[in-house]
Length: 172
Image (tube, rainbow, N blue to C red; front, side, top):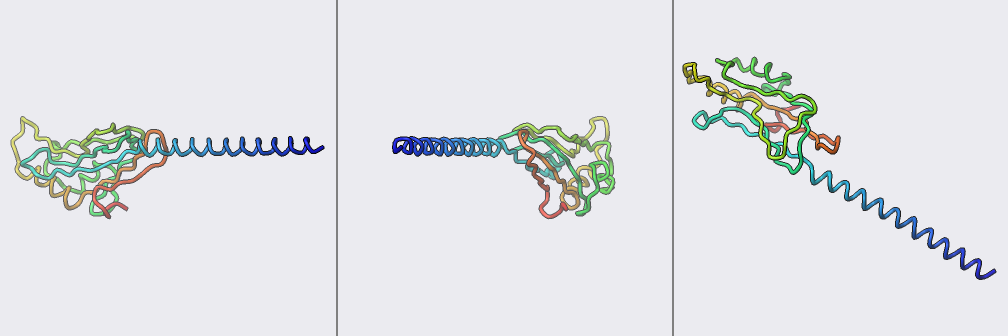
């Protein structure tokens, strides 16, 4: 009878050690998975180029993080009010020659590669047109004093999304 009891105690201890090992393995997997997601987190930065002597004049976004950024949405704000897309934002700017202002829209799910830079709004003088000195200056003033852009982006491997505004306090 004594040996059966000792055998049951050792079996119970072995079962307990097995369960603890399974729990620790699961926790290690979770930690490794979380670290992978963290190491792949994109970081979106904005660049506002407003010096007309150092073209282009405009606003770009760059993925400075270690992983690709999946763009969920881009929202434009003029004077801290949401206006929607870039076309509507430029209408509020009442800019002189919008034919020379090039824009880029992202669709939900488009990606921005690691180290990739994309110009959202950019003044590009058309070679066949005469230069109006107000054009790049007007866009630069509009970007500096009135325009803000909010981008919502996610890591490719996760649905944990982040928002970033080009000018702190101007978005939402």
